[in-house]
Length: 283
Image 1 (cartoon, rainbow, N blue to C red):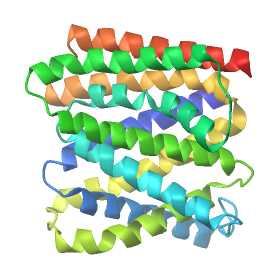
Image 2: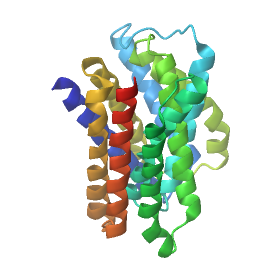
Image 3: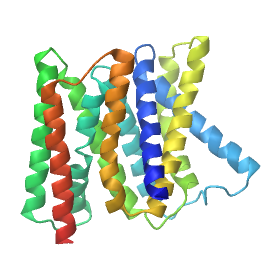
């Protein structure tokens, strides 16, 4: 139960992170918001290690190139979802995100050489069909195809991160993951953020800093969840993120998913569940 509770907590924190980012996206450039997130994460990590040396595990790595590639994926994921959620509801962005398992399977085939049966690819196709069904109402209402493209880019980058995580699974510790993702991201974003800096109003500093706290809390809960339960046990819980998104859309923006969007969500969930089942049966 601890693994499941931690997984649900992680998903809740990430949903709050995305909600906060969507609110900030209306007044601040993406480079500034994500830079502050990285700086807060680094400050929290270094502050905790100053109080309790060694907390979170080692900082060094035997695979710096993989960690830098992972940092690139995390940066692409953050930028992609930020730009997407600026224009589309959270729930629709999350439906695109739910295709990440399909992309992870594809990357596992290309990068890790894993062979998968045709049934897995069939159900992946069903899942992507569900995304197209879910997108239809938004596009008919004048929604931006570019926004869905950003969400797809963010999802692909997230799938890349998950694939690299599998290659780095023997390097335990949250501290290494935070340092090697936040420091390169901050260095890359700093010049762009400074060039387009928007001075935050008083309370907005709190919301900008909150992004880092939520990202750090979600990352830690996720890492602890996978220590206490298997991926097969935790994977179905990911779909609870859609509930968080629908509630946030309704409570803050007064938006409810269209029936076609809900139908698309059902197809995506079916495709995810069946593809994972076919994958486990094969392996």
